[in-house]
Image (tube, rainbow, N blue to C red; front, side):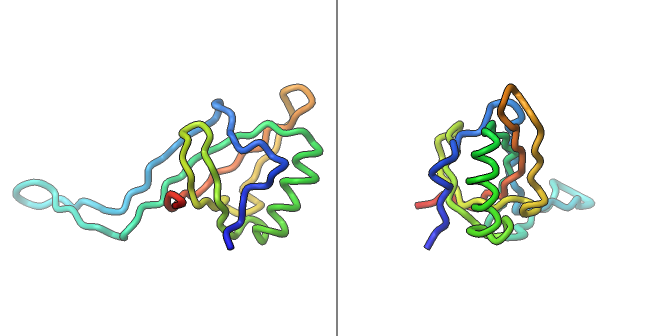
Amino acid sequence: MAIEWPAGLPAEPAREGYGYNLGKNGEESQTDDGPPKGRRTSTMAVDKVRVQFRWTVAQYKNVFLPWVRNDLADGNKRFDWHDGLLDTDHSAKIVGGRGGVSVRPGPGAKLTVSFELDLIDAVA
């Protein structure tokens, strides 16, 4: 059974701080003569995306933290995530687990929660 994004949290990240990095599944090596030689290193590439969310303190403490701690085993399990900015579905994992999440105050009464996700594939 797939782990779902918690119902009490907005899933669309803020545009500020959003960064998408396409993964590589190959490498090139230079040759003495002619073009570089390409070689595949795996059957899939892991994309990474840096996201920021703006949540209330209650959403962070009462919804996000228990979800990461209990459902995701401190952020080490995969979950289904819909990227609202690109309108795509992914199987995601928090890079660095719970320790990869940074929290800072603001704007206003909200918290800015930032972390990086490994995105493996689109969820069918």
